[in-house]
Length: 122
Image (cartoon, rainbow, N blue to C red; front, top):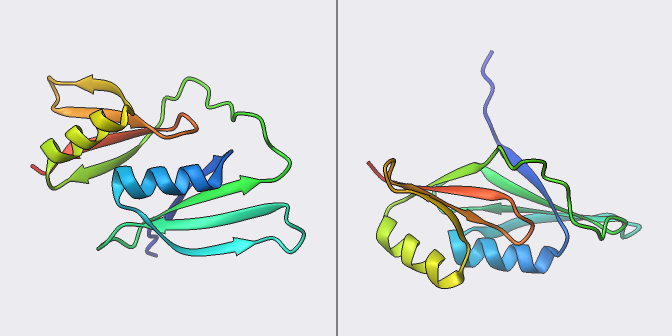
């Protein structure tokens, strides 16, 4: 039996802001979406060029409050082919929340507070 990871889900408060953030910060683009017939939810799948893995963003009409992310002891990691350019962009965007220079990585946060690790190609 073979299992493959296909997506990670993040619930978001402002779908348009999240789509814009992931597009600018990580180059992810919408590949498909599902709208509930009653308008209660929208699910948008984002993907990067050259990857089958998708980020699923879910917006729920009846959940306008911030999501409780606990202690944020989880993250999704991205490998940057140009680490310095990625770092400069993220610094300009003001979304770097933690840098571990000893390990050569840093983390950014999305509009809902999810942490995303940026790793250089090694």
